[in-house]
Every structure is written in C-alpha cells, then in structure tokens.
Amino acid sequence: MSNKGFHVAVVGATGAVGQQMLKTLEERNFPIKTLTLLSSARSAGKTVSFRGEEVTIQEAKPESFEGIDIALFSAGGSVSEALAPEAAKRGAVVIDNTSAFRMHPDVPLVVPEVNKEDLRNHNGIIANPNCSTIQMLVALEPIRQAYGLKKVIVSTYQAVSGAGAKAVEELYNQTKAILNNEPFEPKILPVGSDKKHYQIAFNAIPQIDKFQDNGFTYEEMKMINETKKIMHMADLPVAATCVRLPVATGHSESLYFETEKGGLTAADIQAVLKEAPGVVLQDNPSEQVYPMPADCVGKNDTFVGRVRKDLDTDTGFHMWVVSDNLLKGAAWNSVQIAETLIEMEIVTEK
Image (cartoon, rainbow, N blue to C red):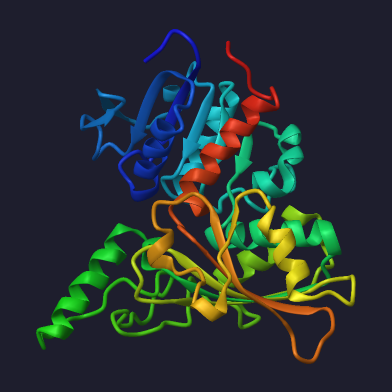
C-alpha cells in the first residue's frame, strides 16, 4: 500500500455497504498504510481488488484488530456488539454503521456537517447514524444554524437497497415475474416482520422494521431519537413516517419543519442551502428542476429542492431531500468521519 498512513480494517467487506466503503476509500485516496478486510468465516479466503492489488479476506475475530488504527464496521448489529468493543480494547477507533451503539450515551453519533466536535468525546467507538437521519440533518442543520428549529415532520420514501442486496434482488425478480405474468412469493420485505411479507414491485410498503408499542416502527423511532441526540435538542418535536418504495438506490424525504425566526421566505431558506456544506440545491419549479433518486446514485452530496413556505404557518416550510443511501447514508459518512478524525488530529499516524 504505502509506507505512510493508517492501518485500516473493513468489517463486512463483502456486503453492499462494505463494498461501497472500499470504493470510497479508494476514490478519496484515503491514507492507508495497511488494509485488513474482515468478514464471516464463510467469506474468508476470498479476494477483493483494492488499488490494483488483491487483498485476501480474513475471518473477523477479536485478535484480528491487533495493530488496527481505524476499523469501519458494516456487518450487522450482532457482529458489531461482539467485536467493536474488542477492536476498541486493542486501540482501534471503531466507526460502526449499525444501530448497535447509536443511542449509547457514551458513544458519539456523528454527521460531520452537523456535530463533528462530538468526535472528541469518543471512547473508542463512534456510531454512524441511520441513512435517512443523515440526509435529513445535512439539509436541516444549516437552516437551524441560521434561523433556529422548533419542529420536524418527515415522510421518507426509502430505497430497497436499504434492506440489503437480497432485497434488491427480490425487487428485480418480482418485477420480472409481474411483467411476465408469473407467480412469486414475497420473502424479505418488510425486513423486521416475522409475520407477513409483501410485494415490493409496483407497490409501497408503509413499514420499515418492527412496530413499537407506540405505533411507530423502529426505523421511525431511530430517526426521531437520533435527530435529538445529534442536534443536542432533547425536546425538539420530531415525527416520522417511513415507507419502502420499489426504487433500488436513493432515499427521498418529504420534510416539513418550523423555524424559530418568523417572517422568512422560501428564498431565505434557499439562500442558506445554496451555501451549505454537503448540500446541492436543485430547485427551479418553472423548469421542473428538483432532485430525484435516479440522479443521485453514486454521488456523495445531499440534494434538496421543492422549497416552499407553508400556507398556514408563518414559520413552517416544506422541502424535498434526496441522497444515495449507500453513500452519504452509509459508506461515505463513515469514511468522512474517518477523514474528520484525521483532520482534527484525534487519530494520528503511529
């Protein structure tokens, strides 16, 4: 690799997000001295190409993290719960893409554009937020900084890749079956259901993850609780409705929010978004310019459009937010956290 840089481990290297992490590390020319790829015993021995070299995947074990500087985890919550503390114990800084540690009080939950200073308080593990939370907060934070924030209501239209590669395959197979007038049996979506699974092709499923006692799903509660933690606003009113759509990649969100400052116009909100880090404003209704998931695939930014003032509430606004859920929603945000750790000299070369 190189004589300079960091010893980086990717856990879950063969999964969809793990593959995106590797691609992002390569595209960003991340300073890697040694790369260790870790996965289940089933995938051990396979090779993956990185920067023109073939890297052999090893089975992830506690001792695998000896000498690791930064460990990117995306292999499921149970794997993170078992191995992330072991990695941290051995001196690695863990950036975990699962929900295992997000709400732990001593684990920073970080979107670099929003709360990078929280990285200074890590104890070896840093959590990557839910994909839908990330893109929403990238869009909301500059508005909060400029005009305050007092309420958030979001409806999400989430891509099937958020449920994994097998769910995408099921989407494709169902689509083909319906077009060919062939029978099929839904087996995967909604993930988290132990009772029924439903057709996703040509459909919309208003359930992502398990329902909670309050009637919200776990995915919706993740967005609610993570928003309050990341923004350090425990009393902020937040509500979410999360829906799975037959889109392979790219989450969309219809977002209503209220500012603390009154008398604002849509142009005021647009002006803030136009200068915001990580945000691309695409908002020209007269020319039908607005973000769509098909156009955001493979891009790290969060795209915002359809900004308009509410017709009844002076401080209320609506906007449409789109992002690649495998990149900003997962791999890119994780790598961005790692880059920020280096920039802030929280992690240094050994």
